[in-house]
Image (cartoon, rainbow, N blue to C red):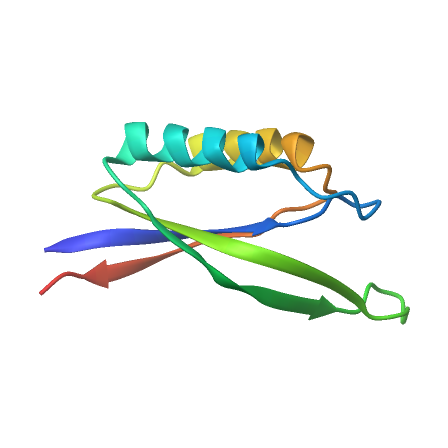
Length: 105
């Protein structure tokens, strides 16, 4: 059965370096679980994201957790709106959300 795996990369700190509250993470956890019936949270060892802004600038770094949900359909408009909500809640210019088609066995 074909489904979509959606990955949401959530930073531990906002753009000024202030730690995001556990309440914010719990709210996202609850919303995604309610909407998609469950989620996987990769939280044991935060992932490290590094990128260089353009034009050539100093490398920036984020510590983050990754939430994953599975869905039988992909509503790109909903995800784009939700990304904007997350960017506001997490104090970020951009939050990465990506999706890929997967086949469950």
